Length: 356
Image (cartoon, rainbow, N blue to C red; front, side, top):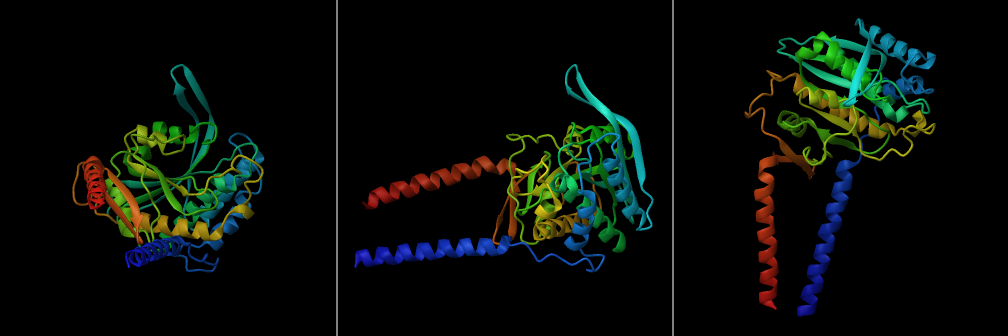
């Protein structure tokens, strides 16, 4: 009888585990890609993939290369097609890598601004449009560029949000964040930025948030409220500081924000295999849906000011998905919760030994 009881418990445990796995798989399955004729207010992977076929046709590194100029002109043309007038920050950017070692060069950052109805600052969306010399750059970072273009269409065609949204197509990321450093150091709009979101996307997988700035409470709370079937797991920023991507200059300047990407490791990055046909449209749709919802939520807040703690601006958060929801709690709770979990584990082991 005891053996039968144990077998039933084992079977129940297997069923629960299997059900949890199946439910998790269902919750992170990407949505079907929206076609190119989807409503202009909805994110369309179909439209984005059409743009990607043009942008990631060949390598287009920073510098006086015809291919890079063609990508620049494509971005400018798509913006003007919406009746908007972009701005080009044509400048010489530099970055201090280590004391005594500067890198720099001429860059052409592209900017366009959607004015809000009652702004107290601006939300900045970033994607770099240069590739490495040896890669067409579909995933690094053509998908980021076309996501930004599609978000611009979606927001322009929708109702005005409260806050200004600035779109920054950065030049010179691959040699060392030269364009983003130039924007931070030289552009007058930088003083109005209250939060920055960098898209360096990739080709496949599910939406992820590899890094945030410290003071990520407002961003994580907005994700929890806006993301359908979230897939984000936090990495404590103090333990794993951000690598070289365009959020870094903003973090160093004290601007809160996050770096978003698709989850699958990109072995084809910086190679001639980084082609548009390797991009998964469903993954791009999933990513675009999440970022569009997040931007609408953030930019429709009464304020973008994230100084101090409040209900709308909680302290730095840890976060993870459970059953289609993003659970988040303050980082300062991590050690107390770990102690409670440890005591529970020790108590469970002791109870088991006592029963034996």
